[in-house]
Length: 57
Image (tube, rainbow, N blue to C red; front, side):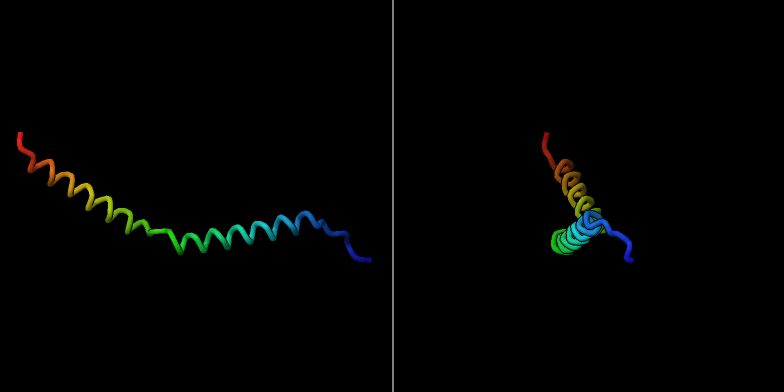
């Protein structure tokens, strides 16, 4: 005789897999790497410093 299985466990497992697939898809579509984020932050900071240095008092 076969062992009883929990259908609830399989349903949750399927939902987790679908959620992970959607998250991976969004990461590819919208995500930026850490290097890209730091590069943008560094260029923004440099632009602010340059602008502050050129202000007249």
